[in-house]
Amino acid sequence: MRADLSKLPSVERLAQSVEQHVPGNYPRSLIITCAREVVHAARERLLNDTPTEVDLQTLLAEVQTLLHRRTAATLTRAVNATGIIVHTNLGRAPLSERARSAMVEAARGYSTLEVDTESGRRGARHQHLEPLLIHLTGAQAGMAVNNNAAAVLLALSALVNGKEVIVSRGELVEIGGSFRLPEVMAQSGAALVEVGTTNRTYAKDYEQALTANTGLILKVHRSNFVMDGFVHEASIDDLVDLGRRHGIPVMFDAGSGCLVDLRTLGLPNEPTVPDAIRAGCDLVTFSGDKLLGGPQAGIIVGQVELLHRIRSHALARALRIDKLDLAALVATLQSYSDPEKVWDEIPVLRMLAAAPASLRATAEDLKLQLEGVLPQEWQIDVVPTVAEVGGGSLPEAHLPSFAVQIRSSIPADRLDASLRSHHPPVFGRIRENALLLDVRTLLPEDEEAVVRALIEVSKK
Ligand SMILES: *Cc1c(COP(=O)(O)O)cnc(C)c1O
Image 1 (cartoon, rainbow, N blue to C red):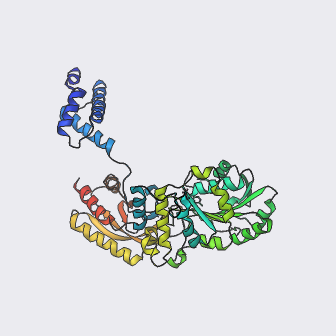
Image 2: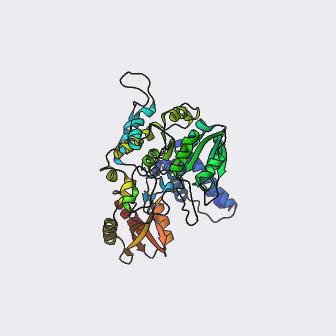
Image 3: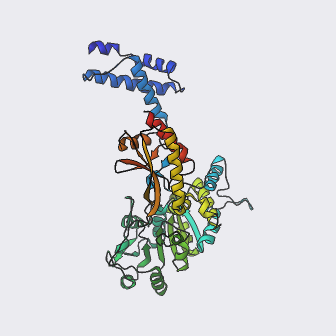
């Protein structure tokens, strides 16, 4: 062991050798840091009597790996072949071409973010968004903040601080772990008044809970779960009627924020924002990156006077939307102004609307490409699957889809892991010991990436 210790190169020697033999022009300080870590780890292994190679070549390779790991980006593009359209862990909605260009345009240099170009005076960032929101939802006013959780927090903070908010026990939801409605309410300073039972709440339950201190009636869309059986909920119409009679504003947290009628696709009814405004809701909040198909954002639309109070609250500044997301959101909403084009331009809508026959054709095409390049003994088939909307939206929607199914000598979980560590990583899923790559969530440029990833993985 002592003999091996004496064979360990010095950090300086290893670093020099890295500079001579490892391509990539890494900064010297980083090379020294990595070389020191590698030498230190090798010495530890020797001192623990762990069998270990300490020749220069081995250590050089270790430094190279470490350098790559320290400098490579970890947030990269990924291929979503899971069949889950709004996949929260994979970044929710992929953006439209128009939204991506708008983001680049706003990022490239200075922008007209908060300036009125006519007068040259200071403007508001909401000026770019508000006319579109009014046009598309029928509301009197609108704005956007960081995300829908922020929208709910801000609206409650500005409108009910200290007062009571009435909510159905059936709607005290948790969205993705970190957004629990009762906790958001506590943060906002609103006092939560729960009415009804888990499965049944009537308008009269809300009515009986009204006091002189009631600040808001809140309805929350149960976007991520389904209640079936002996159930009842008060309709938006009932709550609006109640609110009007008592002079209490009614807010609807719509969650997914759908602007189009999805029933035309044979999907379950998702309440749309224009419907909620038409029904008389005073305020509606929704996400930008779920069914809307845009960037992360929380959108608030409703009555002018309420929006004015929300905008002037101190938290509005802390929760405001940034200029890149704003640019992408405006561009996304512009697509909605053309009801013909929107289904083509917004990837989430395109994926939702894709016909099974065309998905099968895509899967057959991918299968043919793969058969041409993968080893003969790999078994590649096109199989029917069920895709999901995801992102806590429309949990009961089952979208018929197709996947390329791959069986090979490599166990499915190992194949899956190798595809995940490829660049760009490919995310599929495993069913009955086979790897499935669902084509409903593939973007046009993804097919080539899938083929390249599988070729490489098959050669390992
Ligand atoms: C998703 C969702 C939220 C949280 O929205 P984020 O944009 O993820 O912050 C809040 N309320 C409901 C009903 C939702 O579905």
